Image (cartoon, one colour):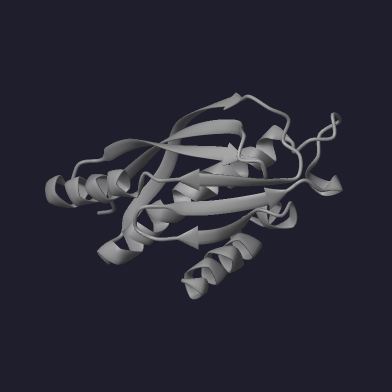
Length: 151
């Protein structure tokens, strides 16, 4: 498990440097769930001294996207992935360590199975919930992922 998280975090360093420099880190991933954390720091704060909404979005998206990437890798096929839509709700000031969790692994697994079987693109909505150190929800993000077998 640790090697998977290290590989994704190294990927972020080279391909998503804004996420890496602001402290977004994958902490756990399996077929069902991914956990990403980010800690409030000077570099990722807004003028109100909480984590900037875009940094929360990067962490939330990584929680969903890491599972998409992992399922694509397991399929051993070339499949494109793209966020087509998203929405978010912010319910509390994001200070301290915020942990984003997505438990929609089975949804992306099924979508990849369908795109491989039919050759048609698939869309799937995945949710990532951010909680603070007290377990209180600070933000909820939904991402509509589109996947399609490359020809």
